[in-house]
Structures are given as structure tokens and as C-alpha cells.
Image (cartoon, rainbow, N blue to C red; front, side):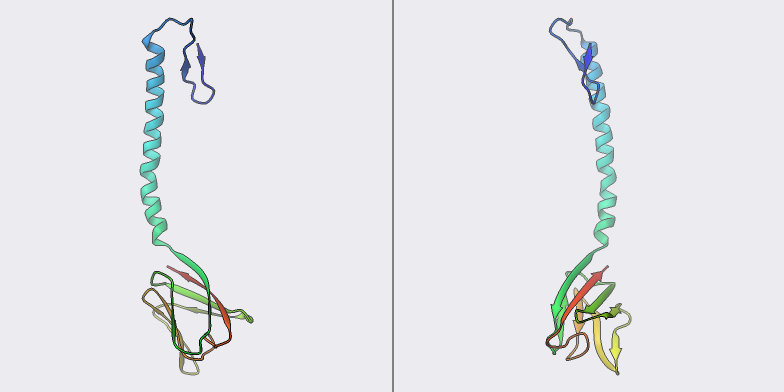
Length: 135
């Protein structure tokens, strides 16, 4: 009796006697394979849940010289900001420690994003900025 290439299921030829054994073997192989698929799908649930907990948003914003909130869809655990014109000028902020410069608030983490203040180094009116927000 011939078998399929990948799963080795029995192929019944026209001149083979019609017996239940080859069909039962096929059924058992398919049942075992489907059980493995079910187990693999069940294992995906916790993995997907774990991945959904960790989010990353990469984006850009333009300075406005006045207070503005950049919304990212979640409250970040950290935000990294870099001004286009000064690639070596990078700021990282976490919720517990807003960033100050010369005793003026520059950036803080807020619900669903981060807030920039006034005409400060991270919010100049003519500047372009890149950010990465993570949770």
C-alpha cells in the first residue's frame, strides 16, 4: 500500500481490498496530529498575553513652544526622546522621575503618553523630535 509523502497516510489503490484497517490507521494519525495542533494553539494563549503586556511605540513630534501631550495609547514605563538636529542629545524619562533643566520641567510621563512643557529643549517650536515609548 502506498502512503502520502508528508504524513504517511495510507493511499488506497483501486485494486486494494476495502478493509477498515488502513482507514483506521489514517484516522488515528490524523487524530494524533490534530491533538498536537490543539496543544500548540493552547500554548499560544499565554505567549500572546505576555507579548501584549509589552508595548513599544516609535514616533515623531514637532515642537510647539507650548505645553503639549504626545499620546501613545498606554502609560509608558519609559520614554526616550532625541532631537533630530542634535542626535547626541538624548533624554530618557520614567514616571517616577520627570526631567528638569535649570529648575524647569521639560518632560513627564502622563496617562496614555508623555507631556512636554513650554519652549524647552524637548519642545522648541521649530524642531523635530523622535521618540520611543515603552511599557
